[in-house]
Length: 125
Image 1 (cartoon, one colour):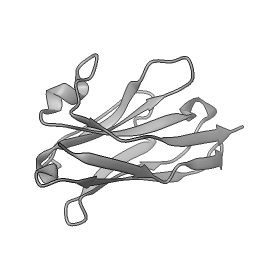
Image 2 (cartoon, rainbow, N blue to C red; image 1 turned 180 degrees about the vertical axis):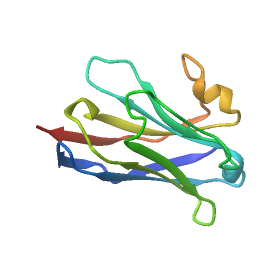
Image 3 (cartoon, helix red, strand yellow; image 1 turned 60 degrees about the vertical axis):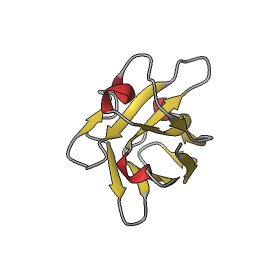
Image 4 (cartoon, rainbow, N blue to C red; image 1 turned 180 degrees about the horizontal axis):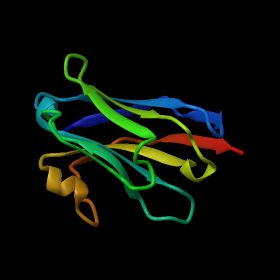
């Protein structure tokens, strides 16, 4: 229903910053809750952050709270993840996701409607 394309991944040094972008398309994409997940080699995919379609509520994983900021630009239909104070433990493939209900985003396992292809983030020490 919603097509998602991530960008902005790359290689950064520990303590550095990086901003990921997710462009959404589709007639009803504006009304989807959006979020970021990540998956490291040998690990399960985990929720990093999510934001409601109206932007009135955000959630963050404890491991990134205070370092990452999720936001969305309704006019551009684009979601962002601003990452600061990056750690080697943040190294993973980051995926953009969309869900009709916020509860689907935060559920374990997540039941999102759409996924992006992923963008690699590597943090060197």
